[in-house]
Length: 46
Image (cartoon, rainbow, N blue to C red; front, side, top):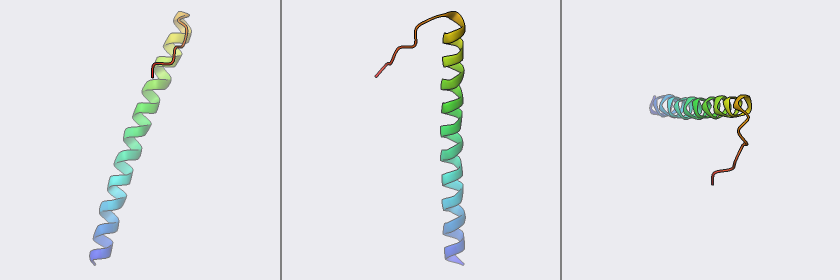
């Protein structure tokens, strides 16, 4: 029973992190499209 509980918690944590990374990727993708439409050069900001 404890193994199932830990597996469920692990699955939830991984799902949450995956969704967070997907949202960040989608946001960056939108920003890139907006820059291309306005004609601004894409710069690397590291």
